[in-house]
Image 1 (tube, rainbow, N blue to C red):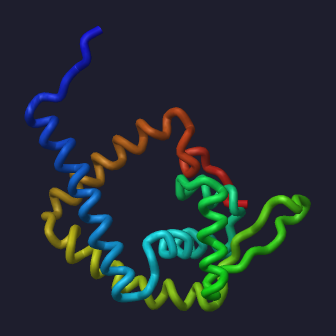
Image 2 (image 1 turned 180 degrees about the vertical axis):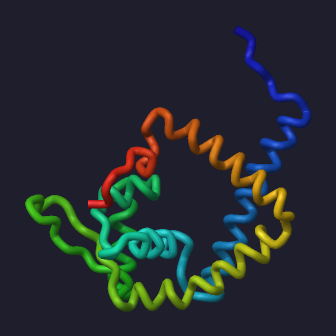
Length: 163
């Protein structure tokens, strides 16, 4: 069967999205590092930990959420531990598992970083768009995420508990 090639408008939309995503992620990450000393992955880990009441995630579930391998996340967590942002605790009943727990230092770091981060997101993205464009983007994101979650491969779509 012949592939369904993208027409000019579809190609421009796809390439524009990819380029925008790369450049926007890079700019917001640079701003985050400059303004707060946190890397984007640091912020992602801290944000995930603050998203639940007891501020702890099982390492394997956090790796799934971030779409990282367990070993990659484990190495990153080790660096964050050295800076006092998180700590590991043994997972009850499973000596091989680990819980990643937000420390007071980590909570303070994300609370201090959040205003600068949201300002960067606003400056480079949100404030450039009209209310209609933001609503359309939300609808587009919901459509694509619903499609991607149908197979149940996105951890949040499976409704999994972080522990």
